[in-house]
Every structure is written in C-alpha cells, then in structure tokens.
Image (cartoon, rainbow, N blue to C red; front, side, top):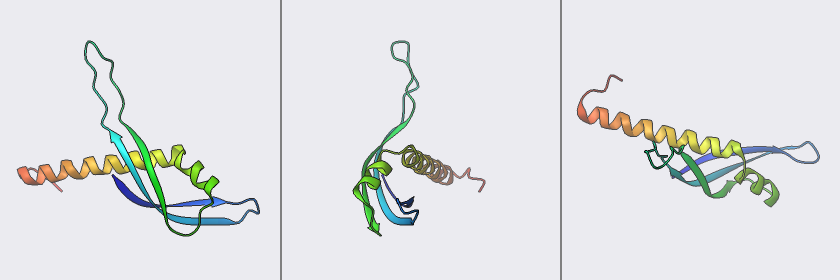
Length: 98
C-alpha cells in the first residue's frame, strides 16, 4: 500500500520545516483466533518513506519512519481502504445507501 502525506518538524534553531513524502507499507489484517491460537490485532509495517518535496535530514527521517504517528497514519489509510472496498461491494450488490 502507498499514500502521500507531509511531515512537519522543528530544528535545533526552532525553525519549522515540512516535507512531502510517499509512504509504502505492508499490512496484516489480524486473526480472530481459534481454540489453538490467540487472536492477533491488525498491524502495519512501514516499508519505505521517499521524500518527494523538501529536504529531510536523515535523523528526522529515521525518527519519522519509526514513529507511532506514521504507523497510525498507515492504519488510518488501511482502514479507509477497507471501508472503500466494503462500499464498492455494497454498490455492486445494490444495497448501498450512500
């Protein structure tokens, strides 16, 4: 999966910077569990972040890639993809109310 977003950070001189990035991630849908295996939550793993516009120092990029903020954005993108797919299926069945 891929999506575009921006990242804003403040440098040592209190100057604010922003970069536009393309994020690639993989997702695991989770597992509802069984008698032998416990349930597992859905999760995402950031594969790469490519800076498209602006400059991002390596240390800022590394911190961003490992951030909970970015993982949350990936989970939101994944959830939106699931919602879009469900809406598409509903439209194809003819039972969409939107």
